[in-house]
Length: 185
Image 1 (spheres, helix red, strand yellow):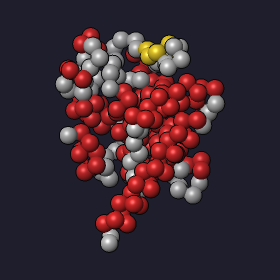
Image 2 (cartoon, one colour; image 1 turned 120 degrees about the vertical axis):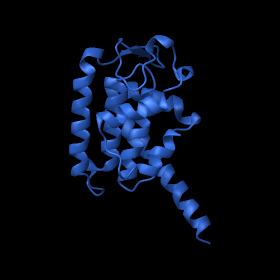
Image 3 (tube, one colour; image 1 turned 45 degrees about the vertical axis):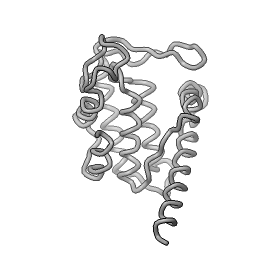
Image 4 (cartoon, rainbow, N blue to C red; image 1 turned 60 degrees about the vertical axis):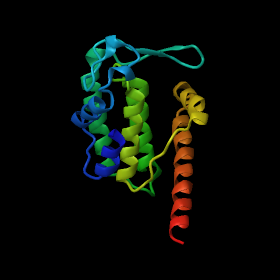
């Protein structure tokens, strides 16, 4: 299972284009997972323009296919540069800020694959958190609409997505603490 790979190997896993494509290939290998067969191309960047419809009904366009390789190269370089100077006690370089920025750019701006972008973005966001000794965060079905609305709100009000993800991280930390208390008795 893909999540087993992430959780078992997260310390050694690097944020690289090759690893992103590799994980996408493993995660999206089954054609039944794809929204349509025309986009089926696991592990390869999109070749067709892709758009989504926001909860408000607004159509959102992403980076054109021909610009994806450079955009991904820049994103990977940026996140790895930020991770080298990340500090838990510095809000500008906090791992959650880096993870949130990666997640938002990957998913809201670039959207590099024909399908599966949301799953890959969340996996690598959690990989960044795990590598910095934070628990993974999860977006429950109850939170899904709020999560989707954050993308549109972030364009008008930067920081909305970070606030949403910070709340999810605090929930994860409480869950982890509760688990540790139960198992240490």
